[in-house]
Image (cartoon, rainbow, N blue to C red; front, side):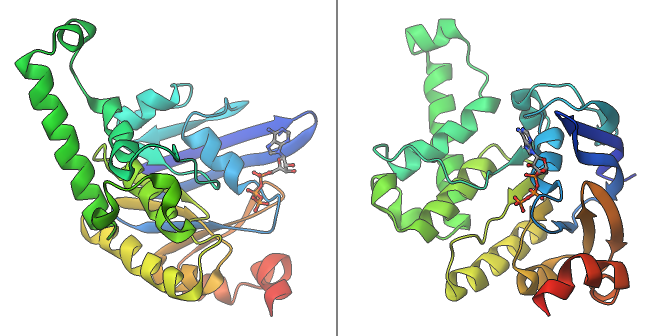
Length: 253
Ligand code: ATP
């Protein structure tokens, strides 16, 4: 069974169809890219998948369970997390505390133990710190753990943002334009990091305008144009698909 199944997903904004009767599957442990020109509906698709926006109609199955209509924190608790186009760290908090925020969705301690600072809560805090440090190590920024997030260069802030999403031990991560604003060297490192996430067993979905990056790391690509899927398949097929060349890659060539 596919890890994610999207069936007939549809979303309009005041008469503009942003996502038009969209169907696609994402296999477990693959890297699936969503590409398309500006305004094609890529981010809206992520917003619908992650529960940030309600859909007009359609179905989304994650791990075989329908998730459409669930709130974002519930979807995250089930193992699907995301990052946004804009990095939004708390600048004056440490890098570590920023990442710990990402773990709290799964924390089990209730108000009672929080108020009394029970041994259970202290154990949980320790566990959260450990998970956050692991995520920072994975992204190669653990040496900045005790620095203020706002003092990091943009490329590292982006990595901390991804670490925060990973700290809750998700099964699937949705990355919205993670290479935006990165230089060539940082983009190459990002490609290795995304492949490392796959090697750890995660399923990855990525929206990205950097075609070189996508062609290098994606196992499958869904191409959107004006809210509609115009092609999907492995990178080698997408690169030579005439509809894609006309709608999108043609501009680049
Ligand atoms: P980009 O590559 O520029 O980020 P995209 O493929 O992610 O584009 P979306 O942001 O999903 O495209 O937008 C799809 C369409 O829906 C666009 O016409 C956009 O103007 C419209 N749209 C997106 N969000 C909203 C909103 N909250 N309210 C009204 N219209 C919206």
